Image 1 (cartoon, rainbow, N blue to C red):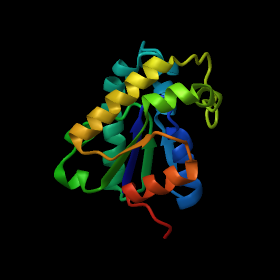
Image 2: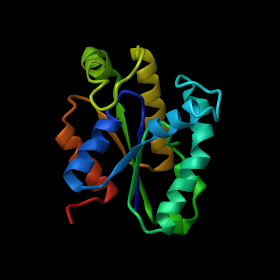
Image 3: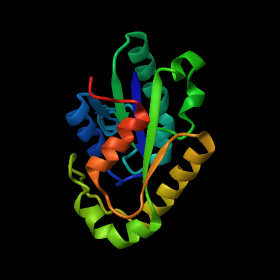
Length: 181
């Protein structure tokens, strides 16, 4: 089975993927590592700030990874903001039956009230170099992902009052169909 965790920047996707790994023993790959491999390997002139262009650039490669995992009957969890909301369009009906996705977003109210906390936890799993998030950009990004998920029918966990990682991990695991085996 292939699991996708998408959503807006700085909302805790990598932290969530790490918690799912710890709790359910499902290994994950951060799409940021794939992105930086292409950038540092000289395969693109895009920079880490080129989110929309990187999504288009990376998605065909990620589709290939996902198809390979399905063909080999392997478990794969990919997380990152580069999963398009309309990810299903890239796969056949049979492939879609082997893929589950959930997106993570934060409400505008939550981000405005807790921006210092969000920024303080930005390095919880991966060190972010020269990271200066703009709260209004993060709000727009979350709103966009939430709208896209609503249109596509992809489950979206929207943090509105508090970020409880254990609670979010349980909710995400249930939506993804992951359980302790």
